[in-house]
Length: 367
Image 1: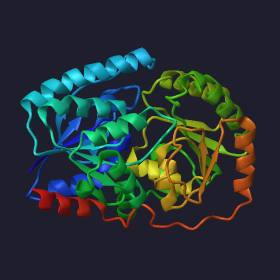
Image 2: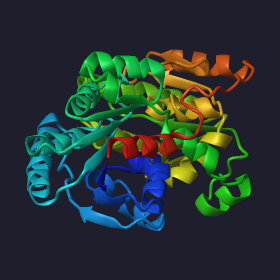
Image 3: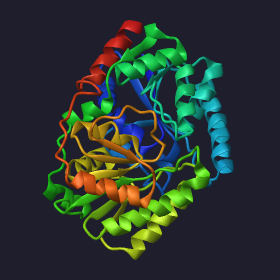
């Protein structure tokens, strides 16, 4: 089988790694990486290098970087991505193409393939994020896909409700959990040597993405978060991984950069890479923000998570997660609660760590 793998950002590529390794090691498959989106953005760390550093060949490069972060620029980027992928699907034929997640550029690539009857397999179908327009993109990708791979039974039932394809909807767990079980993370000393950050100190790991449904409120949201971080900075060093190219993403990025200039012990990171990010999560005191990794990866360790606002509303909440409004006082109150709470136990909520093996067995049956 000639298998295409669509990857548009550092986040989805990190998740793909276990599946890529199995596909490249199996003679029954001819995998080809199709890279686009922010992989080619200097502002976002030029993460195409991470793919190459993991010894994977990038077979196809399609540059689709938005010019800005306004609704107009995002809409234009969707249109441009559809146009470029229309040419791509017209000349390249695959037996199956993997799409992961819910990004607008991933949706655009799949939309472009639909008139060509490209067979897509959607990873992380069935999930819900009511505070982000990505929710519509995710379900749209699922509706245009032949096969759906989900991370929990609850998400499988939701994907079946949306797409009515029970025979082609498979609960295989999450590739990220396989990553975590298979990866030897950095020690504290190795992390300090590599990134010049001492994680033996109390540390908050923060990622804050715009709320793309209520994008007009993002200035208020980031102001409240940064005011809370300013107070927490008296006790914690703060590591901030920078936001994606979403509506208001550049505004949030600029506010974070100004905040870092005005405060000490603030570390801004474009991309740790998968191993670096998971190592940072392992050693940090807790997570603060609104990223999906607070739901999936953090449940493995487990780490306490203060989930802000509605961007991830609708996801399954494990016992390590506190969801609060994006208000300074609420954030500070929840930090105090975490500081006096004993650790929670982890659970194999998102699978047993054999996701890629399960996916390949399914592919061989459908071939």
